[in-house]
Image 1 (cartoon, rainbow, N blue to C red):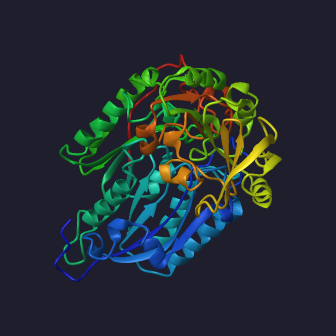
Image 2: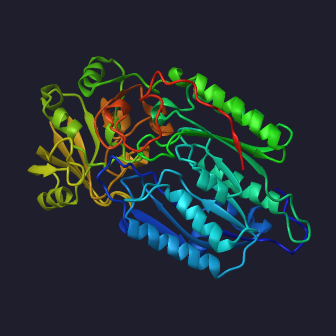
Image 3: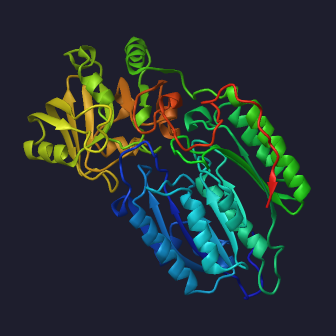
Length: 497
């Protein structure tokens, strides 16, 4: 985008709240779970708004407040209200032409429904009807009618894993500025939105854009968005571990030709519905025992196993011990000639402190985990030797590694996903040199995917259980695939807003 030549630039605010929160997870996401950014700190979060970048020079930026958290359990309603109230207060104290609304879409708040719709309605009431609002979202978010009615533009990631996260945020800002123009040269303003819920709710591990049918259908969005009268097109898979009526797939196409938007939204929605039975897990699956058997029998290394039910980046607590109980009880993994097996990870500040008191090389026998999510198993007894102690990083806090035979169990002070080589290196470990890596993750993030010689997805229990039929949702809209596998074809007529 070429910066406008006029110095009469639009005033554009930034605000939002972002978390993926499982209603099946006992963790409570409160103030200590969130990073809250304001002012220059918030503006600096977006590299495409660095000084000298075209988008930075195309508006007068008013960064207000944004709260972001690692996925987890439902949000403390008092904290949600505090961020919402601060957002509304700051919006009322400034004058804006446009607003960039940075949200995830899968925020669940204890005792509430449709948190993003509630926040969007409050934001709209604060800025009034004339300010253009552009939202960016995760494709695992949910798009209620209330949300659509209170923002002017929406867009979401088109890749899972989310390698296009900041490209999507940039697209939302670019679209907003393009439609705003400047005071001297106004842009075209609002667009029509064709919104179409599809009663399908699947986990991200079955809808990864690495594989068809998701890959092919998402790729069609690039064709849709360049059709005459269209400016953007999105598919939200929805958040499978949120038990609310809004949780389902949504297709939305927006532009200046309402008939084209409606026709194309319905075309994409039919493709998704027709493919509903074709979505499959991104890796071969099995129970934990089957996955360990396969890893031990495999000649290739490193062999990754996803402990998928407690994935902290999908909303798991991160301290479910169900898998680790079984791993340390498996003599094939704890014997003298056992393979080098990294288990990432369990978080327990007291267990880390006990390891630090004992010191590297010291024997320990301690309990770890299940302080938050003890629905599936209690604390696991780790009897072994402290192999590593590190300061970790800002996300993990101090880290201890306890060796139990061939198992290196990573214990962190805070909830911590292990997605990159540097995450493991901060714990003093190199997964490339391991035989087996058991990780609390779903689909492998790009660096681990490239590293893995082979990989299986273990269908383990936890707050983000991949076996959706084991869940017992009470509030989702029914009928809904896959719970109602033989449901009749739905009415896939888009609503024009």
